[in-house]
Length: 416
Image (tube, rainbow, N blue to C red):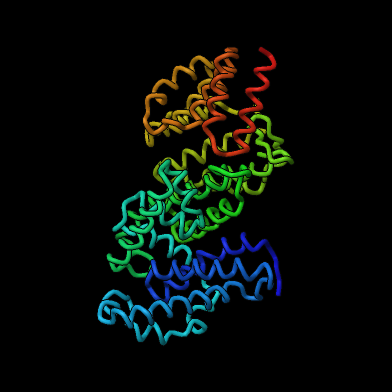
């Protein structure tokens, strides 16, 4: 027995691989996910006491396969004809399958699982939610937080998505070339959300969840190998690398947040920056411009500045203007306002917040208050900045972000 990493982290890493392996073999996505969840629960109970098996992936595959075949036997006994019609393989073939023969290899089908979760039978919101659950390993509560909906609503959405895949008769294989472009945008957005949840967790005691950023980057590399000439695939991979390069400098030893302008840039990952810059430079010269490429270009400008005061904010403003024309959304507008403030002064930045304040998508979002507070502080309006910092602190469920905002408010309060 060996225990190379915490059980919780290991299970999160293996879960999508095991689910992909079972779905490849049996084809019953919803049933496979239920079986994998039972296997994960069994492992969570047994492994801390008995130790992690030498082949933890194989252990999970075997246990999940037994759960699945037991379910199939029961289903066949109850509804033999219906089961034969619904299954991608006949029940006798399912029951005769040998997990050791078909599922024990190290083949990683996670990317195929990613495309399956983005099946065209699903709405874009359901594609993203299901993939975050099955591939990203996020809990239903975390996904609900990302979409600003109640947890029960998200649970129903995920359940309906699994049923829709079953009803559509989806097979576990990469989509044909004619369908790939249609699913690719959803796939890219899913990876983007998984990365963002890992880079700045929506809730909990930690600012970052490195296992999620690492998984998003790993899948991004797989996708880039599959589609090396796609500009947006390359742009997203570059964006994740350039952003993740700052991870170690984003928190103090006590876990508190360090803003970009105050980070120790010697702690940034030079290799990731070099790789990201090379990727975005190459794709900008030959591919059709897209939102992920522009975001990567902005990240590259930040990462290439040796000091915060060396940042080329005029170039960043120009890139945000292009991004706004291609993909207007309130988060882009917020970042654009900050960049404009760095070039033309805080009042110019505050003026740009007017359109964001009326956007329904930002209702209750603490980041609007946080940006307003920052710009008001730059403008010297301490009283208004203090109120906005406090409002932002009340609005976030991320403990590191709340602590940071409360510290900023306390500093202003002390100077009042």
